Length: 414
Image 1 (tube, one colour):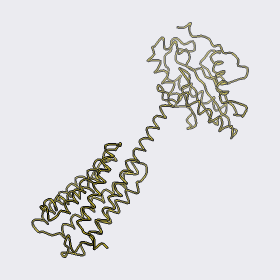
Image 2 (cartoon, helix red, strand yellow):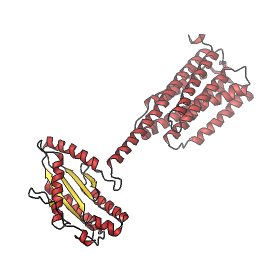
Image 3 (cartoon, one colour):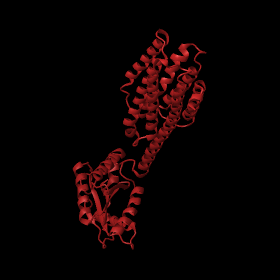
Image 4 (cartoon, one colour):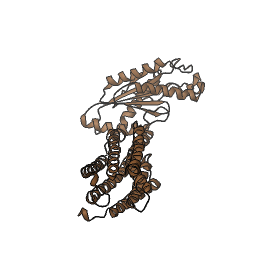
């Protein structure tokens, strides 16, 4: 069957396929988001299509076009494939200079075997060897760097590059076996047709895998963007602690989880003592710095992944402690208080101390179906106000008899 194929027709068909691939990839460049390196691949397919047409017109065009330029254009495809991968993956191509030298050497070899010592045999050998080197380099880059950049291997691309290597090795082997009896449009028709058909098939596969690769990176970027949006939605802008929205969500989740496992859930609620006075005395910038310093104390305390530190509002902070009893919650509360005291932030207008301090309330529950998650917040809030009512700068545990909602004012020190 292969013997009946006209090599020129096969080349023209291959060129049409490559130009179709070029058109599809050019459309992606114009209409879709593509990443650096994609245009290299697009250019490479344009080169190989043009080169195939020039080869098919051999005998009708000067040798410099149909042999030298044509083969250089075809060889540009695997070269731009490797180069484009390094640009796409943002990795250094340490071997680029070597491959540029190989490209120049191919130019010299084609010139020699066309004009000085004409030999189709040696031209095919040289071109096939260069193809093998370039495709092998592209395969090395893909295998080594794709998992690092994208978190997973693109096995379709790896397979198609390997398939191209096999087709080039097949062409090289058959050319070597035929030796000097090889002629372009006659004796080699069958094997050349097979090699070209295999190459066309690999080109289509490489195109599909490159488009998938671009989409894979886009999907990864979208996931990262969504992750950042989620962080922004759940994070307090000033302190980088979780915000109240996230705290409320986690409170419900942990309440239900611990309800099933019958484990305790504790909450620390803290308020900066006389913070309005601090702002009025030192200014709002100093107030922001103070809030960030308190947030740092919360971040450094607790230590478990399950512990949720959040800015509840204004100068109020909370720490949700799953699987933690009253004793454990008090230990964390003391750690927070000690870290804040150690910062020794001056506060001349506080009724509690000459430095910034916290009033803190601690509550612990065993989540039950008869309770609401907000019950824990209400209990911690009552304990916090008990702390304020008894002079501030202290930790109070929730007790049912705590009914007062009045705390001594800081206004008299302003």
